[in-house]
Amino acid sequence: MKKTKRFTLLLISLFSFSGNAQSQPKSKPNIVLIFADDLGWTDVSTGNTNFNNGSKIYQTPEIAQLASEGMSFTNAYTNQNCAPSRAALISGQYATGVDNGVYNVGSLNRPDKRTKGFPNLPIKPHEQQNVIADVGTSIFDVLKTQGYTTALIGKSHGTPHPLKAGYGIDLPADIHHEIKVMVNGKKTESSYLALKSDKNGWTFDSEFVDKYANPYNQEYIDKTLSPYKNNSEQSVLMGTPKHLTDAIGDYAVDYIKEKARGANPFFLYVPFHAVHSDVVGRKDLTEKYLKKGLSPRLAEYGSLIELLDQNVGKISNALKDPNGDGDLSDDITNNTIFIFYSDNGGLVDNVPLKGKKGSLDEGGIRVPLIFRYPGVIKQNSISNQAVHCIDFLPTLADMAGASLSSMNKNNGEKAVYDGASFASILKGKKKCIDRENLFWHLPGYMDERFRPTTLIQKRIGKTYYKLFYYYETEEFTLYNLNKDLEEKNNLLKNPSAKDMKIALKMNVDMVAWLKANKAPTGTFVKDGAAVPYPKADGVNKYKQ
Image (tube, rainbow, N blue to C red; front, side, top):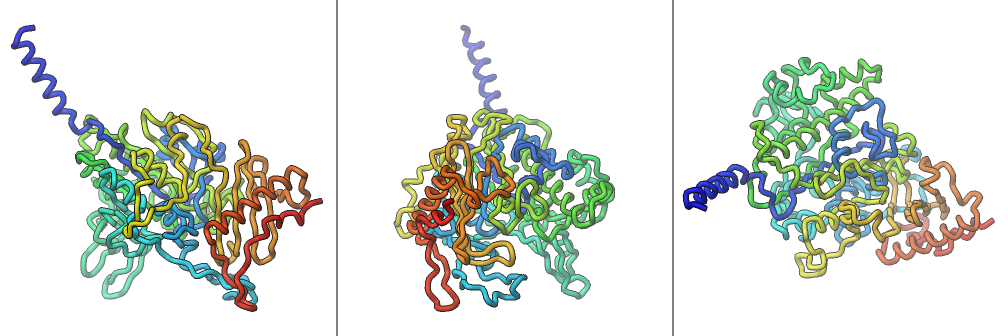
């Protein structure tokens, strides 16, 4: 080959490499984790996450698209409400874990509407922690050992609020959905919608997203919202206050834009407030659902669900075109693990599941979960493996190449985690993981939704069972979830020999777990004595 030809080929090669430098894969995948708030198992329109029980009312086309591109989990679990779910996800520990301690939002002694403040209740609840310990072993800390830049953009719960620093979070963008500022000389409050304050103009009362607080204008509608119109009349938004969900989505998009060019991988955790109980939708989408005949509250609920879905799309599309110029040569989708998850069961109607947010019934703890990682996770795939908040830390550690065995606390003690990695399932190497049991433990009360209870879920073959123990009455209930998703048939009412064998095994495992974790149970009001664990053979009283 002539020298001039070699030189020409070399130049072509060099220019080709330079032009695609942004799309060259990093040694480790970026990770984007979107955590919805109070989004139920059946609130999304895809059927992949819920045995084809997707919503026929609420439209979530972006989440449905995500499901078609990745793996959906039908048996994805959280805790019964938000703070303990977030604490478990970030710490990798059950509430009983030494560095966790978060069982409920606020306390385990929350007023009960039935009893007006707990008169005559037999158990004095355990006094819990409200935030996890910052000991240098969080999910952020683990990923930082592999060179990750880390960010939290959204709701801090289970971690301090306001969140200023710590936990291995490089960008602790703690944003609240309640806005309180002076407007025309009066203290004014808003949920989700920006206010025009006397001091700073349009604001979300947040240093992180105030730059996105200006009202909707034509440029924003055309450039940012129009791709997600989906039969809504977006023109009604002109001049109306910006919704916080859009602002958080915009901030996440800009974070991706900034970090996509960096040498280090990034972990972006986006815990949205949508669709929390203070339900305020966006005007165009609320009108859309009102026209469908929904009540005002349900129209707001549907509006907020679809608004969340649009921001899932915005963040996902930012990976395809980080600099937003329409040229996809900087696409980082193939080198990014993208996750959609919810912190607990839905607020409204989770049929066919029993119960809702705040309960340990399936409607309170079973949620949508989707993982996408092109070329690694099979498209449009579904797993029935039961997974939990505590499993995210070891799973993402696996995917990022981090060794948990080498993680130590700040004081030099060995880090301890309760979760199990399901990376092998994501990669298609296994159908299930070795773990058989999951546990929930609530040593107190939350209004009318839960009372002192321990729950074990066990997988036997391909069948999942749930055994509840109620400390006030010393009673058990047992359900076969494969046959009885609605939890209508307590097998201990008329148990077969097989049912009793399963119940006894679960009973033994429950007590062993309680003892191994030194799980608190509270004390009896009458004499201050510690509430005992269930008897290891307590279910035998149900033998026929």
